[in-house]
Image (cartoon, rainbow over all chains, first blue to last red; front, side, top):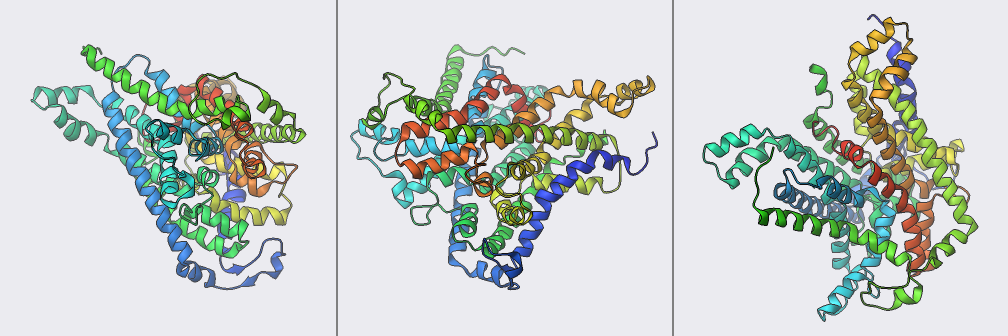
Length: 292
Length: 276
């Protein structure tokens, strides 16, 4: 079928135009904004060119480094726990189980409901006076904990909420991947005398390594993007103990009204996320189906 | 495929599954339960499973005129942005799947990278640009942004489904005298319905749930429900009953979607990474 060159763009044009106008262009202007000193509410004409100032200040700002450290710690703890738990549970529960579809439906509920509802619910659960967690502690005669009022416990709280919300994602990805593993290969391993441990770690998991890697990257990307649940749960506090990078950007821009600095830090976060996404794309190779 | 399992093993499986389900669902149930309690019942500490449910909190929330406006805003933004996203995504996915053209691969990759942009990063420049062009505090500004944010995922989900449609079917229809629009409408569309269902749910869910962009880009008149809920905490302090009622109301539509279309949602979640 011979088609003129412009025909594809008839189909793609509208979508590309919207994405360019409301995603790509804003991102490029964030980069530009990073070179200016501009306060919210003042006309753009009054913005001052400050060159690399905002970027170098961002890199020297201890608050940015603290926030970056918090983000890295949060992301690594959450994602490690979610991967280990999710994979272990999938290995334990894979196979033909009656009613699995129903259980899967229940498992995806935490990630389907609004982050705002998740944040509010966990804020209530962690409430020092009325929260369920302290009520459970009380059964064991333990003293109530001001979960969200102390730096360490607040950090644990945001991690618990994230693990609750996202472990099911790893579980579901792994269940789907394990269901695709060729049963004949496992049978062959078993015939050759491999025990459960060997079939699992030498045969089964290596066969789904690609999915594990993609799931890991997807979780890492999301852990760097996370904002809303923490916004509601702690708003970065107490102090700045739970102020992850997205929240730091939000506060710099809309509480501190320093748009230029916020844009400079945004570029930093964007680079991290784009790098992770790039790896994910290389692994998942989205255009692979075309070679058929 | 039936491997005979030991009954004890089966029991252990179900035991674990039920425990996991309880962990997943308990906080959500607690939210609903708290929304049905009076302030005095919430203030008594300890765990109480039995209480007289009341709709007082819902009456309080729904009674406010502003709530109706926020609900209307949320519905408008959710429905309109989903509709526009789906139309544009169907077209783009079809174009990507059926044509080979220069720039196609780089376009595909840029689209996929856009999918992972942190919303906080987007909020800063979009706020600035929308302020300049007069899209700030307008529902259209929010809708445009949600369409852009949702397009990458919707395009890729639908792209996978369109690839499954045999090209011969389309060619046969074309020979029978169908124009391109009719081919798409009569042949492709019915075959990718599950994909459209999944894409609609994901798009609506984001638009309905999202709150940081909405917080930045709306005012009193154009506020959506999640923004209203976030402001509730500071406004009312510890009125947990009302807060949980609002949280429950926001959670209800996604919960309904999840129960009626769990299979499509799981397809969407695993799309790309897992075959089949």
